[in-house]
Image (cartoon, rainbow, N blue to C red; front, side):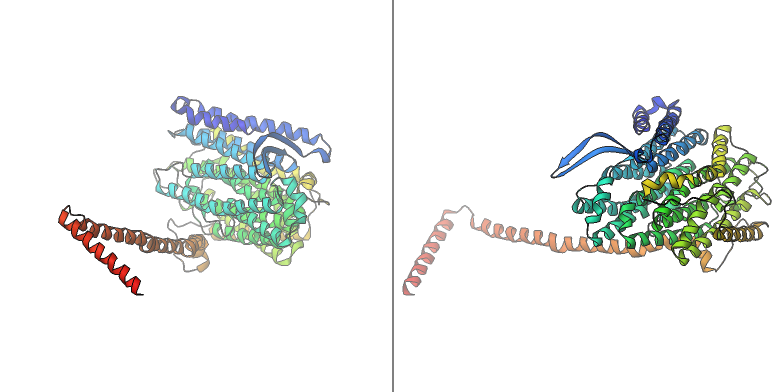
Length: 615
């Protein structure tokens, strides 16, 4: 399953131009084949007893050092198999879509090789049975994201965005590496089952620290505050990359890590609370940013931050919340992939223009894109009986049960989501056309619209299929002894409040954007809008809190090296140079000088002996 996309990625990269004509088709078959294998494994797990659904698959012994032995071994259980189906299923649709989207790119074969590498790395991440092997997949995802975000490296903005994503994620990776070291020191193993069994004997302070270190890694991969600054810049990559990163792979890795580490957070309530707080702050930050952007992809990027924030909030609540986090992660994978690919379809018909101020009225010209995107819109705002309605509402209810503050803020986030997504729909598909005369909007080819249709159906129907079932299915993997289930038509008071809040958000979005939209960004002094346009000053914080102090520290180290270290070297060299110069003058080659030196030396020696005798 992992080897198929990995081997094909290597083949396309090594094969070079010889594979240009057919490489993208072969690369598309790779995730499809992995999906078929994953589906067969899922069916096999369904036929097993609950206690037999966690299957370890040893591959080989990796290495041994001291008392530690590390193995390459896989874990197929209720949690990992859902990720496998999401990664390969949505990944296959994105590959098919990319055949049309990247049709005219001269480096298409390399692009598909990187997509395959991304899929393989993410599969390794979720199938690993220990934290060290997970970290290998974790780094592979980081490498693939760097290659794909900067794929159009001739654009300076894309090259910078790739480097930014790489650097920010390295910060989180430090947390992961320290967490792995702490596990080895305190538990003696990095295997999931060993850590779960041994973590209870570890001092509580170390367990809490371990939880915070894992959270640091999750914040970077899942673009959570304060390591979120890379995500919006990542839109510089081709749109299928945005869909893959935001829907099925990279940003879901952090949520997976937190949920997989539930035995640690069960014994570290302070760390679990931090996870919930980070998720709550991020869901509001992402929604805030989404209200202020005119770039259609950046609105969706802010939305991803926000929705992943909901998942992190749920994961920090406890075992029941963890199941809801995975539920929302899967439904979000469907409707967010749908909308990102829909945005790519809009761009395809608008000469790659991403500015919604130059759209308007596209529903008439791109009917399939409009309908499929509209279904994704209904799902993300939580329209009744869509997938988002079931998955996100469960999180909001769990947040209310956890604490009033979490519940209110999660509810507020739902209202803001409804507003900015309605704004996007109004600016893009409704109103008068605002595009330039040389632009001729048109529907995308079938190879792009078919994946949109499939994802739109999943955006609507997945919640109905999985509601209730998924919490029972995931219960053993997330440590939930009493899985919570609800009927399809059962709506709680919190659910009614959520629908009312969403309706208000939709109404505000419609009222404010049903009229003509100016081509230029309206001037405003509203600090909330200005902050949103500047990504809530995330780059400024990094610049003045880390980059500038780091530059000063480096300048100080350079000065210390130049003055003290190199100064000592140059000083010692100068001393020996002076001594050698003086000695060279004595060694002049004249016999009379040597004779005089000997006489003077004998006289000095005699004087010294005489004085010593007198003393």
